[in-house]
Length: 112
Image (cartoon, rainbow, N blue to C red; front, side):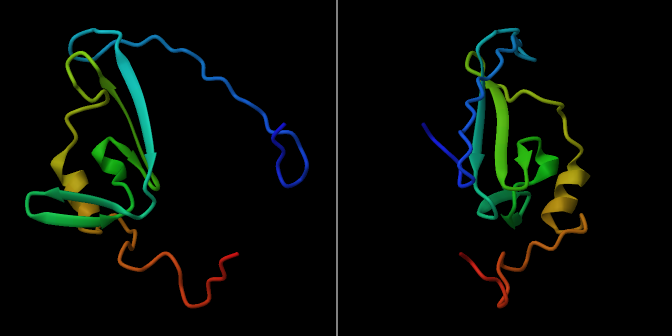
């Protein structure tokens, strides 16, 4: 049995099946994907090179995680599209109030 540091047993959570169809072709062949990339995300758009956390305005996740659903039949990414260009460009240019230029760790950070 897997246990956490506080000696409590780990709980296994089973996903709940949600039937959904593609926004484009109505296929039921929708796959959900997730990837953790922290601040190692990179994007290029109209001459802007972006490195940092996942762009939350791009419709593919946000923060540390890339998350999306797409259709295995036609390849369309599922979601609320189109996304206004200004939202993505502002975030890529750091105009969203977040500072992505610094490393994650300061000189005072202690890593265990």
